[in-house]
Length: 349
Image 1 (cartoon, rainbow, N blue to C red):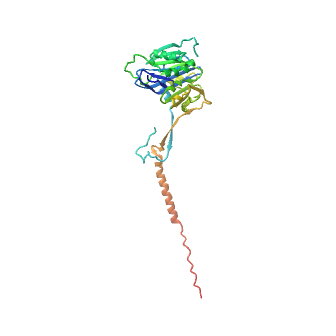
Image 2 (image 1 turned 90 degrees about the horizontal axis):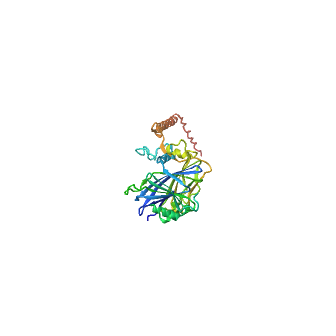
Image 3 (image 1 turned 90 degrees about the vertical axis):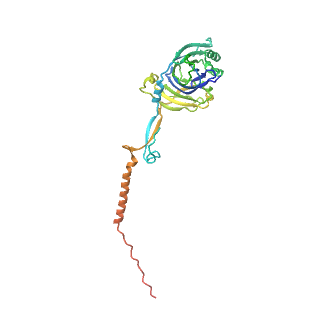
C-alpha cells in the first residue's frame, strides 16, 4: 500500500498502489475568540484516480465549498509594496554600456460508540463525511470500510486527537467522476467552521510526510497573531501584518465582526518527523504593521533623458570657462624679471 502523504493540516491517502502528492497548501483562518473558520485549497499531483483527505478538528465542524476568488484577493491584499530607488550614473545594463535598459522583476461521554457518523454530504467533486471517534483503531476500520485506504501508521498517528476528543472531516473525490480521471491540479477550496476557544491549526499528521513540507497561512483575528512555537519547523517568515479595510468580495466575510487584522506567514518543515504538535496562535505584544517592500532601481531621468547626460553640456561649459579664466590670468600676470647678476670686481694683489 502506498504511504499517506501528509499535508499541513491533515493527511492525503491515495488509492491502492497509486500515488498522490500535495505540492501546495494555502489556508485562510479566521478566529473571533469563539469560532474558527478554515478555508483551504490544495494543489495535488500524481497518478491516483481517487484519494482520501483526513483532517482532525477540535469540535464538530460544518463543511461547505469555499470561494476560489478568496485566494486571488489575498494575493492582492498582501502583495509587496513597490518602491523605486533612482541612481544617477549609468550601470552595466544602461546606455551607453548596453543597447537597452534592464527591467526588475469537547465531546461525547465514554458511552458513545467508537465511531459515529454525524453527517455526510457531497460538495462539488468531494464526498465529505464528518465523524466522531473515541478509538483510533475503530476510526481506521471505519474509514477503510468506506473506501478510504488508511495505512496503519496513520491510524496510530490519529490517536492523540482521539484521546483529546477531537472529531474528523474525511473527504474523498465523489464516485462517478470517471475511471480515467486523475487527481491532479488545484482542487476546489473547502470551508470548515467549528467552535474553538483557541486559535489552532492542526499540524501533527504532517510528521508522517517523507518529503519537506511548506505552509502558507493567512490568519484573521482582532489583533496581530503569531505561532507560539515553531513546532519543529523553521522560523516562520512574516509576509504581511496589518488591518484590511474595505475588503472586497470573499475577503469581506473573513474581516467582518472585528477580525480585520490579517497576519500572513510562510513556514518550511525540512524534516517533517520533527513536527511536535499543532500550531497554536497567540496575540503579539503590539499590533505592529508589517509590509514587504520590493525596491526597483531605476536610472534617474528628466523628460525621458538620463539626468547624467543633461549635465554633460554644463560640465563641459564649466570646464572650458575654468580653462579660459586660467589662461587669461596667466596672460595678464606681470612677469618680474630676475635681478641682474652682480659680478664682484677682481681682487688686487
